[in-house]
Image (cartoon, rainbow, N blue to C red; front, side, top):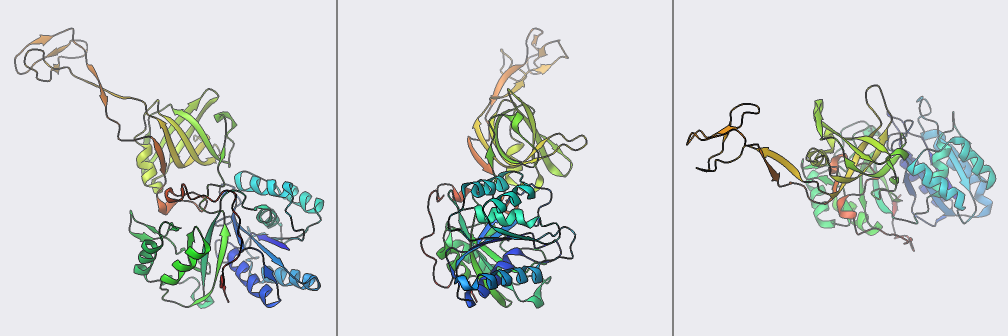
Length: 441
């Protein structure tokens, strides 16, 4: 059985991965065996109705057919008990799918939910076509994520995350983990774990800040790597439970190439090529904006202040640079046009950067001074005048080089592939066997 569910949390409390952890424990006690780690699928991060991290969950297990009804009852009751149903924007959904192979149409639906916009109507149509079962609470929008999580079979790339959860008495309190142990863990496990610390600010980033049950989460290339990392970290408060998830985090799964800028649509995460058409400008709060163009049109690009290193790269671009930009598309609003909120910039070709300077004196070699607009130059040292001379063109050495530039670690989205993962992708690989002790209890 493939059990998908989503949209159980809110900005005030709850966590869909925590519900998955509870379900894993309950199903194990019922004798179910798991054919994969719980799958944590991050969907399109740009949809306006997303939950906090826009993560949907799928649990894939084998079970005694006599227990099917009981398993479904356990899942439904757990979601109902732990979802924040009182919150206006929380609309949980559950999908049960009992066929072994995931239909191609469901897999395609999943890709579309990660890279674009899908509807509840589309999801329900597929549920009916393939004789799955779906249950929605309130508006039932979580059915979309539930089906999308079932449909993601990781044919491309994937990573792992181990999540440790707090005891309920500590929800909302400051998280207590020995910081030095996190830096030690990062050093001991690199490059097989990623996004543990922000070295620019010397700050840990594995602990969330909200009121959710998560104490910390460690992402990495293998289940063994994240388990090893987990054992190095020293929590200073009780850990209620922990689970290893297989996930699409850190894979750029959300980004989809467009052939022309005119194909860009609001809310879609895109990869687009173009030529810088306006010099970057800094607006209040240190955000950087510039435009790119191609034969089909132009689009605004924004590197916001929190992107750190990416913002510093963006400000050094010049008109004529050939770039490939990566990011989510913000719809036009007021004076703000359609804009790509940047996650990455790949610099494909550098344009020459030109400066115009006063010429040198032919007699004494000193830099000349202007005598006024259109009046030529004079030398303050030897007194020579040159009424017909003009400024000379000087090529300035560019600080940038061709290559990819990524937003700073602290501002990377769940799905953004960091520098160290390039070359470590797992295209076409599958999980052969789950490690021992991949969850507790």
